[in-house]
Image (cartoon, rainbow, N blue to C red; front, side):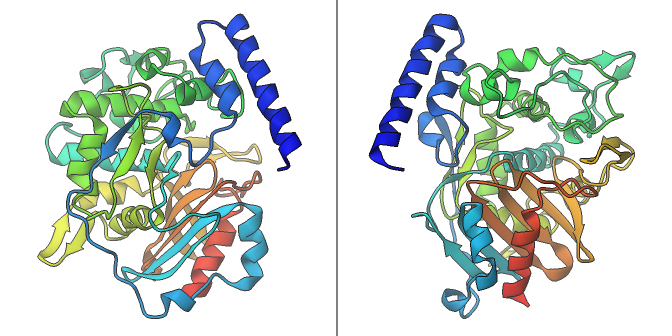
Amino acid sequence: MNLKKAILLLVLALVLGCLAVLVFPGNYYVHRALWHTYPKIDQYPIFDNRVVKAGNPAPMPFAPGVAERKADSGLEEAFARYGTVAFLVLKDGRIVAEQYWDDYGPRSHSNSFSMAKSIVSLLVGCAMTDGYIKSVDQPVSDFLPEWDSFNGKTLTIKDLLTMSAGVKWDESSTSLFSTTTEAYYGRDLWRLAKREVLVTTPGEYFNYQSGVTQILAFLLQKATGKHIADYASEKIWTPIQAEEDALWSLDHKDGMEKAYCCFNSNARDFARLGQLVLQNGYWNTPQGRLSVVDSAYVAQATTPATYLKAILPDGREAPCTMYGYQFWLMEYQGHAVKYFRGILGQYIIVIPDLNTVIVRLGHKRASEYNAEWDYPVDMDIWLEAGLRVTF
């Protein structure tokens, strides 16, 4: 970007910001959204953050030849087109490929965006093991009386996990006035959560809504009596021996984690989360195999909620085969795939039958979706690249 264009953009942002103050004096988030525009992968410094401590760090093992092993040269254009900043592949628990671009490196923090939803799901599994939650069928109102029932149908934790809560929430991340934009740039997630009224019967339709995960996080906080960043450190980040502290962005100082997004870490430590799912909730340590998340819960979380109806990208109604408990699911070339997914092309891809985990972080993802499995088609690039370096 040349200097003249940069100055013009800065002036435009200042003008829009001043107009926002005059027209929307009470909407703090509007001012921030106009100033910072579309969410970016490196914006965590503009928010208050709570540290997710890495209490027992240990390096990931490397396979021989990592330095020489690169993504296939035929895919370089696609990697650049989508602004890739990190690409890492684990095979049999060892790093077999690792590349960075755009001044990113092994310790560079990048926003998870909605990959955080899957972390919240894992924490629900931990809370069940700890006895804070009885089961996924427990009513949400046991913890948060604001959400009880609709037309006599009780809202359960399972309805939240499967994105079938039936609440009112505008998911658009490109609209200035959407609820998701207000959640991202605003500073009162509880106020927003209380606006999520039940509008359809829970447990019938899959409807992806970030606000549902945020309700789940408030429930976790109420159930455990702990900040979810602290609980994540205790139950997941420390047991899987993450090398670096992570940062979970908050709505305000000492406030609530933006649980539906905004878990900031690096490619290596994100890969550990994939390895944890690959190993069905277990983590291998020098002292032996450690159960981090109950294996039965992980299995259920990564099983499609086919009893739900879903509207596919081509408009067809079909059973929900692409989503479990805050985890995305698909098939690729005959392989069952489980994955964490973020809006700007953040992926932790788990391929159990190949004992492989692929992490891709970047600035963009495709706008086109696979009609059958409802995934952004750039996923095909990262899957192909990962398989080429491992086989």
